[in-house]
Length: 397
Image (cartoon, rainbow, N blue to C red; front, side, top):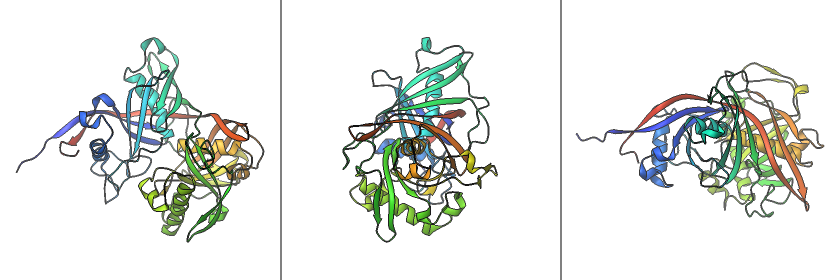
């Protein structure tokens, strides 16, 4: 019986924030996979182990959750003033495709460390001890991310005492700046942050109901609704949502209708082929709760509660790009998120998510009546879990 041997591809398995994924240098991929197309998608799906009808990713590097089924391709930047290009792919567990429509804010924190460790930064700019600034071109959404990475003895510092709720162990802090993170496409409202031209819309979801929604493009396209309108109080953990098929269907219907209103898809049915974006989240005023790790979270320590869906499931913590959207929407008086946070104006806030809390900030301004965000900031951590060669059957792509 004939067979095709496996091929070996240099790769690094990294955690970034509350996510993890398989990182590749573009030059290390097989030639057919160095350009966008079916061959690249098939190869990377096979690396992760998708599609998997068993939902376990037993025969791949994926972790069978939206947070752990990701791929990243890094290359020298094609953009002036940037160090590297960063391309992110979300791999569905049961789908035979990759969604390239958005960014992963969590894995963004691993890009700078990867670039430094792989010699992609001019050695003259890497201090022996101190912070190394890496300018990243996020190729999916055509935006700039600036990472400030701690370097010790000339190498990336990965261990440290920075604690991030949703990550078990402390590590070195990586500071991220998302520059001008709002979309600039041609939406019904002229693009920018609010594609419908409204801070709050009445979103009519057939068969589900009418919802007050803030739809925003900042970090990632997001649809925010009030937790109370869904029958929630904002303290829900994964089990309360992910084990409820009716709730999942309702939230996906809201996401799909939001995608249509934001001009991202032609109709709700098309949203199924774009599961990564937009994301849907629900928010509520602060209240006490106990996080998934058993840690008490006090209402007095947070500004609002937020729960977000990722690839059809409630996220165990909060996506980095969604955190950018939360910070931005909370800074604009009149949005659903701002109302949940108590109104007024703010540049920094702390929100509660299923795993604990997160502090984020956004600088917003109003120009000629339109809102814009110049920068969003947050801290994450990153660590190499394994590096070497990933093996894939030679006929997999």
